[in-house]
Length: 224
Image (tube, rainbow, N blue to C red; front, side):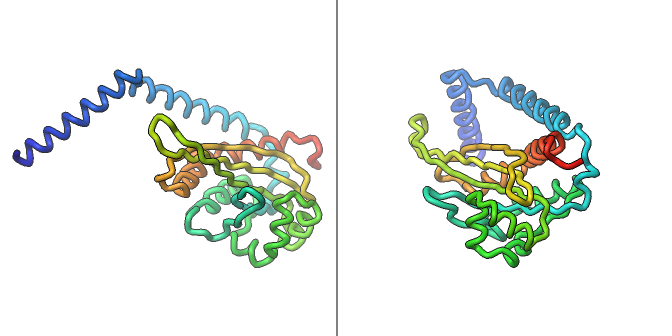
């Protein structure tokens, strides 16, 4: 068979497979795209609603430290400072925080000033550790990002599916919770899990920061 014939054969095979899948499972690509577009518009509208509250003057030049860790079955397995797996995780979130007028810390700055044992205590909601960490950094706020994963067998495709959850909590320098937001996604076990995490942050960072910002601005306990 000629090269052209092979290409034509494979093209027809792919088209037939897609059509067969759509017919058997009732999947409509146009409908899926419409649903995705509607969801994206809804997300943009929600973000605009969240940031419509005004308290920029309360945040200008105040400092905030972002700390990200991955939870194991018993404790926090490791902290993400400059881990290559997460790539631009910190820069993406810190850039959005700076747009609000906040000053941020790089992961290396945090690591240089806070010992691992103290960080472990802070992540486990030790308020004394939070206050000590805040004093060392001169931070007014912290955002704790905790990554959890759960594996479950998918009987449809006969492969393990990994569910990823990221919990972001905004606290003041004494460890008092101001706001919390959760985002989630899933990936198959043979996929790039850290790539999925990076994608989650790139796609949902605007919502995460907007939610934390809104809750801070509407918190009655915040000094005006």
